[in-house]
Image 1 (cartoon, rainbow, N blue to C red):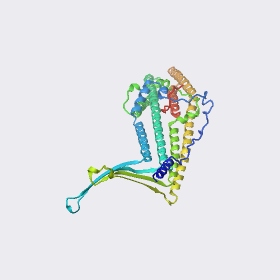
Image 2: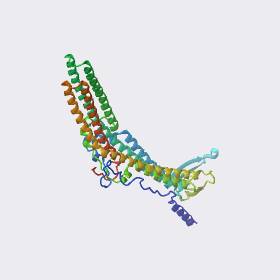
Image 3: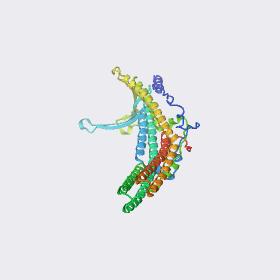
Image 4: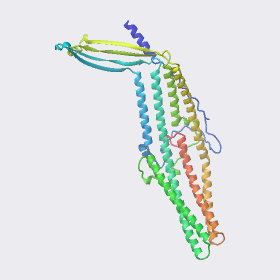
Length: 468
């Protein structure tokens, strides 16, 4: 009889490995194998998929120092890491349900009927399995698998936060350099405007120039002084943003003096890589683990359609004398099991399976959508990278021509050939051209940063390679 019980128990435990979860099959990436080709993309030869470190893309030691400080102190990143720790702990909580729960209890009592003083003591010590559900249909195992995949998805989400932090800091660093250049342009314009006001006033006092010339020169000066105030505000706000991203105070010596220090410090990433690199993006990885977790949830829901079997066991000692508690005659044990099955629940459990399957379908669509969105973001960044060099050249040529025009117009005004209005228009054109050139140079740096972000660089996976 004992052998029969042993065989039945062994068979039940063997069935505990059964899983009703469907196998996760990832779809082929719903994007082309290569980025769009054409003049706007400058597609190069296909290369091995790079795994990039921020130090190989952002080569300036000052930016690297700020980034290291941000990775150590940024509060959003700390929140993300705490969420990862909580998700990992939840996996252990769920997994503990797959194992027997052991407990121990002890008791002591004394009774004296009639108050004769001839009472008896009762002592006990018991331990055993207080709760253990046989996982015949994989409900507990699939619940653990679902939480494990959610934890991995949370880790991927933390890498998304890390990636965004690095890219946002680099962008703020580049913007600070651009605002330093814009402040220099405003200061140069104001200095020229002051000189123009002085000369125009002298011409007015000498009866050579009308009063309108002086007032127009004063307008240029007032506009330049307003721009100086605006740029100083922008620089202060840039510093505030960098402090927020870094998570503390910063050494101002780590900030760039101009864009000329920024652009060479941000390495251009290669365009000719397979679009499968998107599978390394942390948001895509997070969506994949979400899909896997949804599949495991289906297994949990399906297992709830079947009976639940729980085992309990107890062994211990009981005696009416503490000294004889561990004598052989005090030993005893018991075992039992419970099986529960729902006869009617108005289709609730089957509806639970349908809910899990619908959530799986939504997770699948979300996974494919994440890949498609990532592809579009990279393609857009590559389109800008393919044309930005021509825009930079054109902006520089425009500034050079505007500067020459301003010089000639000023000479013609002083020579009495042209009106002051012509010189004024030339100065405004030069101011606009210089600001536009700074904007184009900033866009060049931001495009390289955007490619680092959209390609999923610095995802903490694999061996780092140097950007080309």
